[in-house]
Image (cartoon, rainbow, N blue to C red; front, side, top):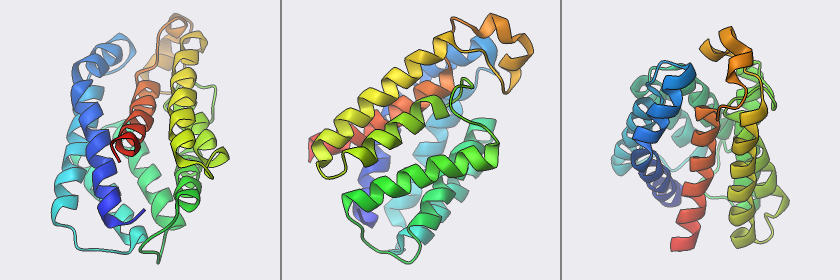
Length: 206
């Protein structure tokens, strides 16, 4: 992974957010503000635009800048949470201009762990973590075979997202009617699933 591949991966993820903008809005209207699809689409579009002209080769500094751009362009709770992920990647990749798949996978897990720490949340609380964490774990587990890794990560993230239907919300507006949240798919978890779908799409295109 280097600056160029980061750019292409973000383009692939942004494409998924754009294609699912309306669907994410519908999911968020059930228990949230209804702006999820808008903020995620806007955030990733802004990152893609930034990367078109970014000259920074240090991956740590590049991801840190992406986090700032995302946070400014997606003023929402998940926008802030996503920026925590970018900052986790930045810390893990500080001072490196190019890394192998295994190190990139490790940085992805570091990103998810940073979200857990900063947002004071964990798997099982009906959030984006329910898809991000199993996806990142699968990515790292199969890192010796990138093609298998991205496929397994996409599958794990999808299964994690689907599992949120049976969870009771702990955070955000949905927590005010926690029992009514049971049976409803969490929109944030779908965002996590789409991130891994984008990553897998990038590798398939290669």
